[in-house]
Length: 127
Image (tube, rainbow, N blue to C red; front, side, top):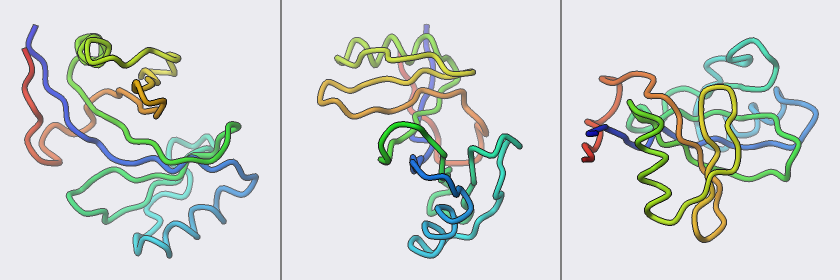
């Protein structure tokens, strides 16, 4: 089944107790405003705004070591996960509405639902 996907953005995983302080640091470091200090209302995500290419950039409070990972957004989660597996990625965990995946080299990334089909560059089309 044909589906579409594209780079959605970058998530800064922060293993700290103070999400606001982490968001403030990355806001100043990247020159991006804190657009929503409590995205989703859970106290776990702070969205930064004004990223180049309208990419989604957020700071996420986590329990694992701090790192940066990317999100790939798609209009068909199952098809995109299968495509990634065919390339050598493995499934790590299903979280809320998306899959955490691991590339063959160990890098983690997420396959997430497409948020705004018209908001960024045209997605890639896959058969």
